[in-house]
Amino acid sequence: MIILRVIVFSLGVALVVTTLLSVTRVLLVPRSTPDPLVRIVFMAMRSLFRPWTNSSRPYAERDRVMAFYAPLSLLALLPAWLALILVAYAGMFWALDIPTWYEAVRASGSSLFTLGFVQADDLPQTILMISEAAIGLILVALLIAYLPTMYSAFSKREAAVTMLEVRAGSPPSAVEMIERFHRNHGLDRLNDAWRTWETWFAEVEESHTSLPALVFFRSPHPNRSWITAAGAVLDAASLTASTLDVPRDASANLCIRAGFIALRSIASYFEFPFNPDPHYPDDPINVTRDEFDAVYARLASEGIPLKSDREQAWRDYAGWRVNYDSVLLFLADLTMAPQAPWSLDRSHGQASKRFGRLEH
Image 1 (cartoon, rainbow, N blue to C red):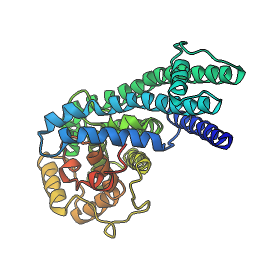
Image 2: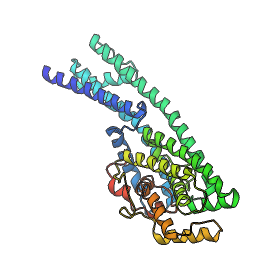
Image 3: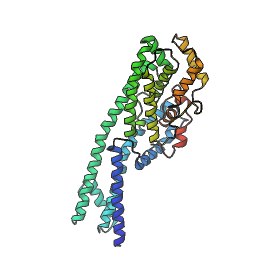
């Protein structure tokens, strides 16, 4: 019996350490650190949401439901952590000669929630009660401090997404963005936009890997999404670098690079496989030559200066797009983003096929 109690006490300590490591990864470590417990919680919540978010339902209905997915999943982490701590300490209390499991659970609950209806009988139990009460208070305080950080990053992300609607339409379109700049500002002003979005991509990469629940936080407007905005900007920058006959500027190239690095980092967190060094045509893209030709003709009809060698322009565009094509479509599918040109309108359900067991 003594050996059994020693084993149970050791398992309780191990469970406490594991839970605290999970809390540290999620709330304290400022980098991408996948955690098994978080994955289980988010998967379980996704399973509960699935009957109301399947593709047979209208998008507006699915969007309303999915707006609650990330906040509720995040809030579910706290009771999950508290439950593990309660079970772990109940085992340790039982190992310290509390006669029944019922009384051990009562002692653990009394300590964890600082209720005080169970008193300690000796020094070891007193130490356990004090440590468990401290852990419970720390967990609640950390989550409360964590939420403002997340919503601050969310607000900053969405400000740029909202402003893009003015410049690229709703849903955002790369072609619409170029046309509106041509009509209203002049194509030379695109360079300022690329620098702004280069910074946005860097911030999104940092926030959406260190605070991965942000990936699933939806925009206030159902037709907006951070991932479709990213796709529109990347395609507009790729068309500018490959097809527009404008003075050469590195801003568009740098924006594209910042964008595909950010999307790849986020996709890597969800274990999506991609070629880190793709090359067209060895690695195909999901935009067809006919679609590119239609865009070329539309831009030409608006009087936008274009490079005369359409074949080379297509190869250059595909050479840029191949760097973010697969990760863009995966993240659009994963987040159930709204339909937008050259993003979710051609998704192949990659997230639902590969991540039925891995969704966060």
